[in-house]
Amino acid sequence: MTSPYVTETLPDGRTLVFGLAWNVVIGNDLDRLARRSARRAKASHYVRGGPRSHIVGTVRLKGRDAAGSALHSPAAAIARAMPTGTRAVRVRWEDGRVWVGAAHNGAVLMGGDRIYASDFEADAAVAALHDMHPDLQAYGDGTAQPLPAGVITDHLTADTTLQPSKLTLAAVPVGLRWLLAGAAALALLNAGWTTWRDHQQQQERAAREASRPDDAQLWRDAVAAWQAGTVVDGQPGLSSLYDALLSIPLALGRWPLHSATCTPATASQWSCEARFRRGPLGTHADAVAAAPPGWDLDVSNLALVEARWTARRVTTTLAATGTPSWGWTSWQQLLPALEGVATREAQPAAIQPAPTWLPDGTQYQPPPAHQSGVKLPRTRNFDVTGPLRSFSLAPIWPQARISKVQLHVLDEATPTLQRSALTATLTGTIYETD
Image (cartoon, rainbow, N blue to C red):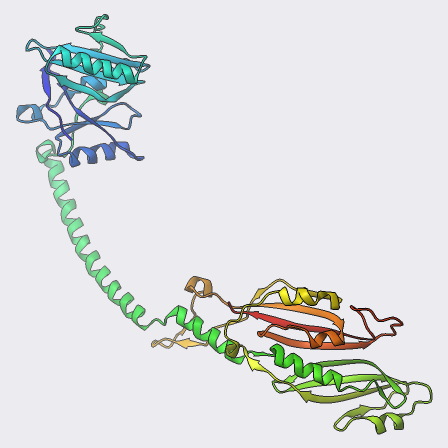
């Protein structure tokens, strides 16, 4: 924004310019921002409202006024002359117009550099300033306090000098013009070379980007392959394991059952082993005669018989389970019939994309999954301990894999709801895919 102005030339040749338009600039480089503000306002000159002020005054000078080299802002001079409090200065010209300049704590106020057509308008402006700043003190024509001598002229410095918003060629020395012309030519050549180089690099980048795989898709494919290859037991697998445990006899002849363990052998078989301790009058012949078909017995120990066999296992893949939700509600309902249920902290699944080769023969390694916008599944280990009978009701998660079950025969005189002669510990992993 520009404003009508009045110029007044002092005897020493310096010129005062009254009536600048003042605006706020925000940022760190205030000189650069002030010049930019003047250019946006289509002003010919600008000046800052104080050394640390964010206020900038702009004016569009015309004709000879614009050619002056010692142009000063009296409003900026007042700000320097009266660095504390709020001050206003009135100057009346012979034609009846009145200029009001105002500053607060060493910075020109917004609206503090205006020319009014009459004393009435000037009085109203000063009254408005007083309403906003009760500590306002006014000096000069039409006020109770005379204008201090030299309050403007003695404070005209480089800080009050109006600066041209644009650098004109006429102000540049001839030698410097040639230097600038040479620098411009070099800059033009450099710009041409830079443009060509950037164009070449852009084409190379475009070619690389065109051949670059989709990182997110690589991770999604890796997750899908991992899910398709991850075997889970869920409720059908637990049921088949429970049947395998129930098929274990409590004794082989005169050899009572001591303990048993089952672990996954393949996707369709459990690998089980049981240990039987010798009872009174027990012989190896008794154990061999009582062993179920398909059992392999180790009778090398006089006091212990170990049996090994395989049982049917029912499984599916993680991909086939979808993304079912999992929680603890069902387990919490079963807690009175269990010794305990515990889980470990979830860990990211160990998944890596398959090797990808670029057209130039190099192997491409995508960035980590989270940087590619893909959330990896997590794994969480769990343990459940309780009477074997309670596992017939266990609500195992669909996306759970059983890694081991251990059965122990305890000498319990009085079984309880949470403990019995046959106590099992189930260990496994939950795959969290949602």
